[in-house]
Length: 437
Image (cartoon, rainbow, N blue to C red; front, side):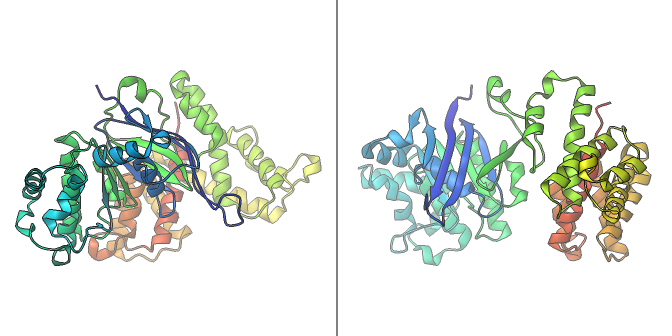
């Protein structure tokens, strides 16, 4: 049975603490990783994913919190124990390779064994086996400057494995590689995890890599915002701790709700989602109201989604002064908001009622709302991609990628920012359409 391998508990990493330029790279991160798992840490640049990886490796000391690997707290290790840990427990693969240019390929791979005091024959034998395995044995006597990027990365993987560590950590390992070399490296990692039974943790910002992982940890602004599970290798009691996947901008109320889904009836789930739907719709449409105006309007929107007030009552209450129980908006803003909300809700309602008509209505709405200029081929692809998402044949990342790709690459040719907006609005419609009935 898979055992707990790594435990990160409330890890905080703060640079320039207490100064005007203080930066919180990690802000209370907790995660558990089990032996032989393949975990990907995913998120945009600057989200803290590499800092988390370095924290697990022991290269980044925590400001607060604990990192426990194989039952040992890294912060409490002696210098000798840390050296031992880096030599035998973890192997690291970096985007920039970090090969020593003055050493041959063979000597680069041997290097971790030099510090273990092993004989020249033993370490060269072990290194050559790995070079042969990764089809670069013929490059053994060359220097790194004579290798391609893909070859360099295979050398660095061999170096990471030469001391036979249980854990392999990879920081954007294919970021500097062409597509063919990147695929080669990803296949090697898959083999290392499945055949060698190594625990593998990889940092990436490329959504195409996520299918390789057993578990995907999503990060944003120094925090873990959710997890997705492709294949669960953990013991049953560990899996029970997970919360159901939620959108990135998740409220504390919904996170609590989703953790308790298993204890709720389907009807209760549908009712309790109404406040979250209201919050998401409010956030989507509004941008420049005071907190009190937004809060009052959100409460009215809940009443509207609960069918406790009609469209006319919703508009009039939005326009009513706050002292009289309204939201304190003006009539023009109230009318515009309600009309927009009604339009989105109306289109979303078609998803289950009439799927074929919904595809046309949603596509036409998104094209009109975002002022898309599509020729015949792009339009057909746009509708096909929307259909795939509505049928859950792709996730939101797959849809955004297809919309963003150029026509020549088989995509719809949208600008990246436009593709993101289209996807966000479609996800909102799918949320509004959700019913527990």
